[in-house]
Image 1 (cartoon, helix red, strand yellow):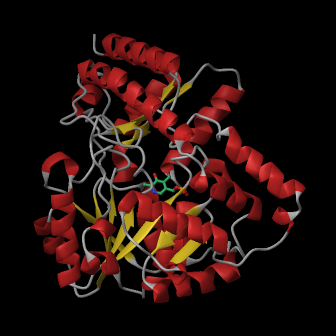
Image 2: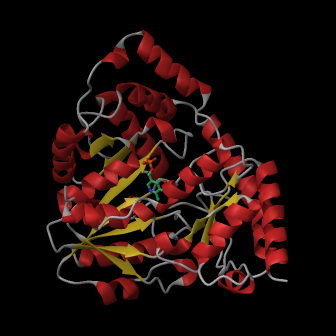
Length: 395
Ligand SMILES: Cc1ncc(COP(=O)(O)O)c(C=O)c1O
């Protein structure tokens, strides 16, 4: 049985593969510290879980919902976006999806024709390129020449073709944790408007910004940029709700309607119980979300100088958001006698029992992604093991 050509071009998620391998080792009783994961280590706040239980007990969660989500959830999403980004959306400009991942998948399904391309500034999250391919489009990796791995208009202009349909901007960024300033975003937004290129703004980490840095959403930069932008976000990272699978998109009503049509044939609707849980998160007082943000900030501030001090590790700028550090490890790889970052990552896992992800799947093979979404004692131990590993190997 031959698989489709489309699916044969697609790679499995490298981050999920690393995470599964690590979980297998842990299940065998090996004491691995997992810094490969892209999800908060916290459990979902109790008030959210309680709302889900109440929705089950009342029977509300028993039934299909509209394909694009419960009307009251869309209203809550609009209110939260208004509170956070200061912008208004109408009800027909919102769709609720099975996680932001499926939101992005749907976007590419409805906007791309064969041969269309999507600009993806490096480093980029592993799923964008594969989702573009699955939609019959072509991902175009963009070398970002700006400060701190950030893309500039000149970088984008170099790669733009008549088939360029969209570009993805992810800030705070996975894997680098870096944040675009309002001025940087305005330049990118104006360029997209001038060339009628759709902006996919992946704001999933917008509430995880640290040390006084300010998040700006592209949609807050004036009507023209807002109209050109699909805002993608969700509850996974802010409320420690990765397992519930609720994301959403706000933007052009025609695109939202098309996404709704595809979703109605694909998933039917996001799980009703999860929608009631998300509703409680969005309408709640945000204190639990803030507590988790502060915990991540504290970990970043403790871990960053340690990572910086590791021999052969280089980081130009301290991350400002998300929960990742993305050091360049080219020198460390060479000093330890490995020829690729993958060999280094493999040995770190097998010998030091520390799991991280190679930067290759984010488009930058000389880097590794370290997630600090784990408790402080594990982070301290992982640092110690990595330091010992580097010292032993480079002797
Ligand atoms: C940059 C980025 N976008 C989107 C997502 C998808 O999040 P979810 O599908 O859990 O809402 C992730 C998750 O890791 C991410 O890192």
